[in-house]
Image (cartoon, rainbow, N blue to C red; front, side, top):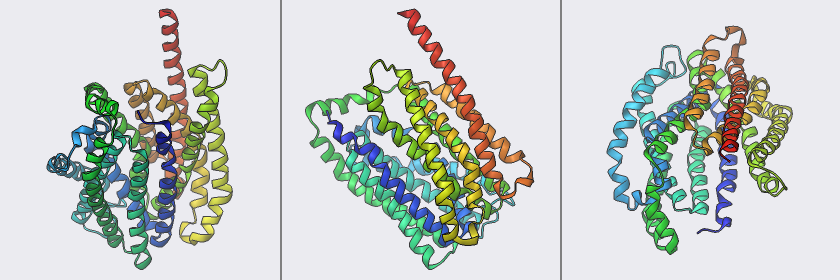
Length: 423
């Protein structure tokens, strides 16, 4: 078995990835301007959804059973079906986001060009995720951390370099697509040797584990994991996609940048929860429910402090650096702050449900958040102006957190009573 030190790279590896992705996004947004960044952000959100839907749970299979990608031919054999699934999903997505008057519909690019970008970018990101899932399955967490950093650095730098030369939307998207295609080639080359090295350097117990892992996941669990992934991503990004249909490109670009910054609160809160769990677990007489409650309070404290710093310090500094183009950035962050603090509650409780394989309940609660985001984005009055997407997101997260907290408390209280009756 791997030592615990190797697993430290799993959470630690997210830190440089988050920092690099955030920094390159801020620079790219400043160079491209809010309107162009609004189009890029909408396309990125759409591609993320296409990628998760088209994956059909395959990354989970690879992570649980790396042997299904034991050689490059196993990867190449799946490309034709991937192209077919991604092509159909991208076509449907384009019809939804390219309505007349929407951000994509008004973009200075032909629909066939946008479809091509969606198709190629989704294929590249899906292949990249397959390879990264393989490293996760082989428990090469240090290698996984390095590759994930490469996966955000290469495209991020490519867009920044091109944007520093020209703020043209088409050139920025070309940089994004070709950098990810290049990344796919690089990861595939690494994959071709890493699979052999991964199995060759495994201990006898680990080889047995890899051989038997394919029997560890049931079809219903795979389906639940897949549907949960789609539901979670929709709950996170449906507001950006819907906002692109109702709001103008500049408002969407400012909202997307503010949303990325606001999500720092969740990242810090999650890190606080992970760092405090060992200390809390060592406390005498702490059961699982108390463990989660204490972890939640630490996360809320971290999220609140982070949101205060974002609104009070980061937003004014960025406002001064980015200039008048992003005039509403501060107000977007201010409106999003309570929603992101509430989001911490909802996300940790949903993670608790996922840990107990309660995927039906998880999907149902995600549907509540999705429905509230859709309703608020579509029906809030126009008087909210450029703050409409941020208001809809923040209110939906607060409402969703209340519902999630009430429902999960009832679920786990019921499970504890059953356990007590059985005992």
